[in-house]
Length: 180
Image (cartoon, rainbow, N blue to C red; front, top):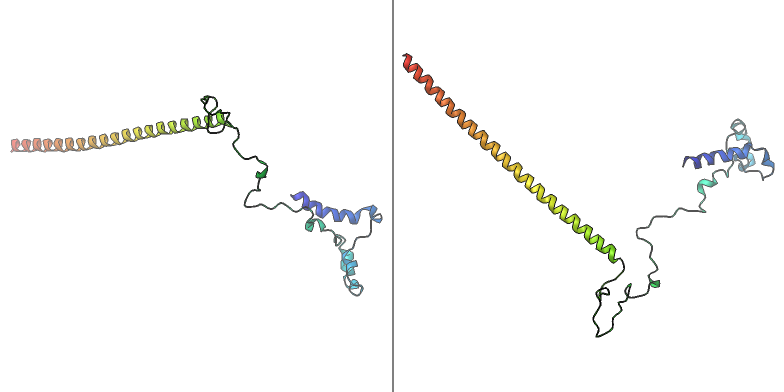
């Protein structure tokens, strides 16, 4: 991307400085594009600025010979008229005779194995999903049970400690009454 910009800067400079400039027609510069009555005003500036490119230097920036393809919101139409009407494969069937199992009467034989593989894959994914769901439910149930057990153990500890405190107070009161 930067090379194109660099090329558009280097090309005009190389055209000005190249020794074979006498082979090509002279380029129209800023000074020659001015009317003759204004040239003497800009001549000191133009002598001090030799890097000003000729007027046709930026043609590559505005060149529209190969415009970029614009994105479209809908895909291009396929030539559907060339496709023959009807199913992919006609089933060979004689009226009155039984249909062979390897030649079914409905559906297409095309992509049969691929469709079967897709169905198997989908059923496998769904069964794994059901297994994971059951495992998650079991894990949640165990987690809730453990939480309830911890709460019940904490309540039992609090009750036991309250009972122990009552016992200790009763022993203290008995000691005091025995001392007095």
